[in-house]
Length: 264
Image 1: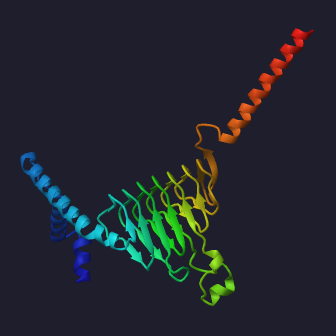
Image 2: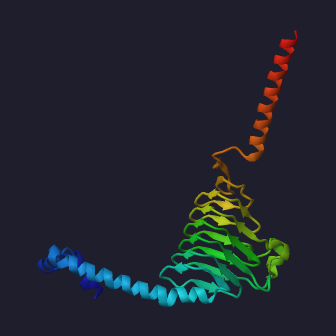
């Protein structure tokens, strides 16, 4: 059989050439697509596909997600995947939360009786995100979590090499809550380490490894993530107070000089 295949593939014999020619014609075969015929076919196919995905989402995927929730708000919805949720914990979702695609959520009950994941109103989480909850992970309102983001409050293994060798879990001190404050944007494939707080209004660039707190209204990028820009459009309140004080002092100086001039 191998010899026959090699013969047909390489021989200059007329039979082998004819077989190769037929194979090329079969591979390049195509049909015209008259619009009066193919457009209704396409519309029917797309309508059937959307009806199938709607039924799967509303009747299977969303009930599965909500059955894992201790509490969920209005308008919670998901994509056309069944999320992978492992372990037991409290999942609390606000209004209009969207878990798109497939999201992996793991509750590690060895660190807490009820590990807790909180997601605030109007927050969206993209496909292939992974959230590890040993004690507490809190995601605020109006957050945008892009695809393949990894958020964990426990590294899963102890930092001490001897403890790792013995197969021990992380020490309790190494399991530290994560807080993502309101209106934060986490770029694709970014990673948020245990104990980190990402401040309100901040942006974490794609692929960043965040191992320390991020101040509010800050853009961070890199490994480890560092500040690269500020998103403030107005000076912080403290800076504004300093400026107001400087203006007041300047006015006092002008008034003092005027009084001195009139006295002389």
